[in-house]
Image (cartoon, rainbow, N blue to C red; front, side):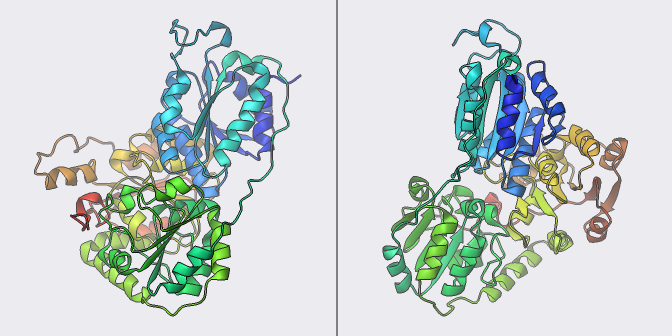
Length: 528
């Protein structure tokens, strides 16, 4: 009879998991042994548990599939919490599998001093997961693994923790037929929403990450075409909608804010209007709001809707587009986009050179929470769904490079990082070389934590703790066998990217001014 580790992989394989990211530890070695013998699941060993979860998150964002991380007990599990929190805040389907001490040695609520023991390991994950499970008995391992996977991938998506006592992995355990039934959704009554849309003269469509996770791009495009309405996408929905109605700029730009202020109806699809997208709710409540969301409570927690259409974003928006009458355009979106681009060019020609270097790429771009990342998140024209991953959910610095490792499993990827955030996970250059992933790192070196340096300056504080000692990054990459070049400024970046196809690093010595979508530069200063 198969052991627990083998049963665990049976469940993952049944849910079409093809890759797992992780780090071996004395308690999870049975999983590594089972993976060694499993023909269908690739195991990518990383250099830190936080990288394992970031990589699983990056893979999930790039593919829409479940990302899986395997770590060991206690400190290994604890090391994942920052990355798990980012997946939680961004609604990313990630499964964190952590071993726990042997069941025979556990006394609930009592710390006995067993190697790697935690008083309550599962409790650490409660605040940063959609759900957390401990496997209560060896014969229930497969059942709980199946339950955990289903929780992660069912809408609304989110990370799930699964704790497995290490002795269950080696024990012979019963199997379980995993549930592969697809989640079904009903389309709610559209009558009220249809009436509000019919009466509107200046509708605006506001699209969030929930629409991206639903695959609602075509449906949103069809609705925009019917209404001739501008489409504003938050960071989580960049590249989702292929339409001339898409506004190519951050929601914080004054021309985009004017669209919001002038709209007599906002159709919000897959968004909860979080603080980062509304300038901490200084953006006034819409005149009329129709919300499309899988979760009615989430849809209404920040801006109460006049009508909430609870259901799958793609299904509901498709039905709505088929029902509403056509309208004439009230907004010249092309003119708005030209105004936004002119603002960017006047604000920072150097940043616009960076953006132009990335134009037309078919690579997935993963940006860290750094000044170049803010520019890319706000102003880069993403041309494909899931073409940009950005840690705006929890705002975790250090996300960019390790998340890009996961995205690169699915195809060519460009990581745009700063020197400070890159050093959080620079040891995983070894992982990049080891796996031969098609990942190019664009490392913008401004000598430290540039965004925090700016924050100190505008607060009239002394510069402290933000100017960093750092290595010669090109030589560091080369020491791992990764080709690297160094540029002075962004002028040669486009050509350098064209010549980088496998593991590579491009170091750009440059400093950038933060864009208008960074919170110190938000233009709304008082509640309306």
